[in-house]
Amino acid sequence: MSSSVDPVESSAVLGSNATPGPILLLGAPGVGKGTQAKELVKIWGIPQISTGDLLRGNVAKGTDLGKLAKEIMGRGELVPDSLVNEMVAARLQEPDTAKGYILDGFPRTLPQASWLDGRLAAQAGTLPVVAVSIRVDYNQLLRRITGRRNCPVCQAIYNIYGKPPGKEGFCDVDGAALVQRADDTERVFEERMRAYEAMTAPVVEHYRALGRFAEVDGDRPIDAVMAGIVSAVERLRQ
Ligand code: AP5
Image (cartoon, rainbow, N blue to C red):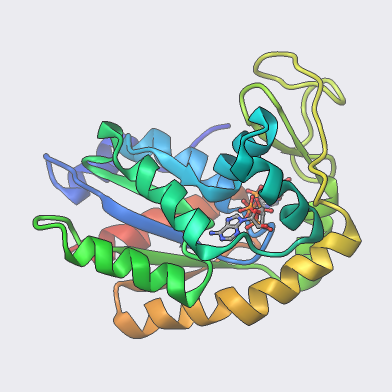
């Protein structure tokens, strides 16, 4: 996909020793957090940390966490905070997070937010978090979720309506057969939205109140949403 944001230009705005720091991508299921995070990784050279992907990785490997998470995710509910925080803590120990990272799908509850805020406050020299919330209306989200297909090999994200692969059912990058997530049904989506409204919408308000927060209209072409996120982060980091 072509990018309307020049990576060189972007890092120039952030400074020659560009340190994007911790960035949160917030928003309901299907707003495009994963799609955007994958593009932002290319611009800023910092990793995407998706708690959904980490949990699905545990499910695929059959770990104890994966066995527990599989049932919970299948119902569209949230995995307990302590388990998710522990998983994120382990990921944040890895050296590729030194200049920053994009948290996709975390924090999703106020206790998770409070855990993250406390951890960042305790780390001298860490930039404060900036949070970007992506907004898309319910009917569009339902269409995105039920139309989504994923590559199980490279994790590329497609959509049968809006972003189909060149060859139907197969990944453009590695040719693997695309799969549909078990929780991408209308019934589970409704439950995920209920969980979002009850548990995650207050997290958005928490970061809005702290400042260093921006809201971006996600119902635009992928490149336009990305440009909106990049300019919001640059503004918030100045
Ligand atoms: P998770 O995997 O995080 O799911 P989610 O938050 O529901 O978000 P999605 O991955 O469904 O959507 P997205 O916003 O990334 O959209 P995408 O870019 O794929 O979590 C799954 C489960 O894990 C949870 O339900 C929970 O059980 C558990 N979990 C995870 N984190 C947890 C936590 N912190 N605490 C507790 N439990 C946790 O895009 C969607 C579709 O739209 C794609 O087909 C894409 O091609 C298309 N699209 C994207 N952008 C656009 C655009 N601009 N225009 C048109 N189409 C677009």
